[in-house]
Structure formats: structure tokens, C-alpha cells
Image (cartoon, rainbow, N blue to C red):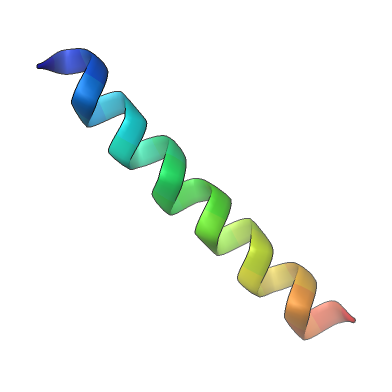
Length: 25
């Protein structure tokens, strides 16, 4: 269960990073 939660957090973090990169570029 914890590993799944970690995966969700990692995905959300990656999504935020991608959005920031899109804004920068």
C-alpha cells in the first residue's frame, strides 16, 4: 500500500515538473 502511495506522489511530482517546464519553455 505504501509503495502505491509513493508512486502516486512521484507521478504528481513529475506532473508538476512537466507543467513548470512547459511554462518555462
